[in-house]
Length: 393
Image (cartoon, rainbow, N blue to C red; front, side):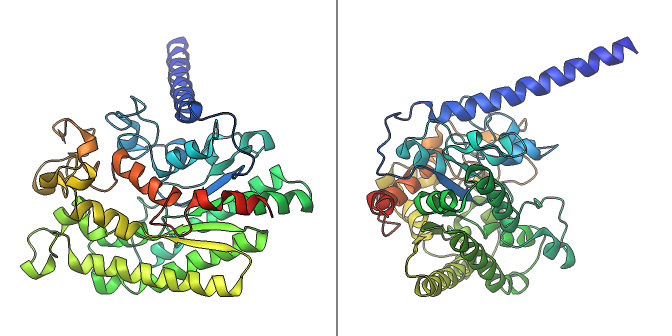
């Protein structure tokens, strides 16, 4: 009995130490940010989405977080795994640093129930494997939902409402928080297509999901607007047909399946269809809410430009469609081995690669994507140009 108790105590200490290290890492990501932030910029940012911007929610709720909890994830900047699906920082890390926030928590890292002091600079609600559609819909299809988080976009919006109630106790406070905060909704939607495709569903099965995905995103934008949001950035989906894991999964296709860059043309056409519908929805919402700034962020053209002109952006032209860290084989994206597994093929320099693990991108790419949002040209108006305008309201 004593031996069992001692073993249990040791396990608890290990878990506590791991969570403490993750929390310390989250703080350190923003510790270098300037403390004398300009009062003319956004005092808070709230984001929603999936693994492209999840800074720790998945690893805090999952009982078996898998690859993201093991090296070499986090190697480039943090030196250890932090719950980010990359070798280093994500898009939101660079935005938060530019805005000058000394800390910015993933929602599930904070104490429950939500407390005002935990969300002084906003929060990140994004969860890896997150979808725009809810898990129940996929279960009814039916799909295997074991790899689909229950924390879909609608759930994330519900989390935000709890935080808003904690940080703004009066109507006046709520209006001020909503009007002066920056909202990043997405990227979201890619996993609504990823999950079915990787369960061998066809394009004919997946494509009808697109209007439903766009409707869900639109409803979430409207929910934020109804709460008082004035500045919302909504990224589209990046070119899925250029993702190494897809190129491996659908390898051996006909020559006509591929475009001039070597990407799957039919899958990029699906992505472009999603983005056209999203831009149309944003246009409708702008007309319905003329006092709200809703900006589409063009992740598709931004990432495609890195793939079609890799040398201009510092990437290895010969490896632009290969994973830096993967299971070997074509595109270094063999699905039988994960990046941290023994026998995985790991590149020497992630900054020369677009893809990190065959599905997610490298810190080098996320830095460029963040710059495209902060300064343009892939967001119009770019984030930094809207700071003064928003906070004079």
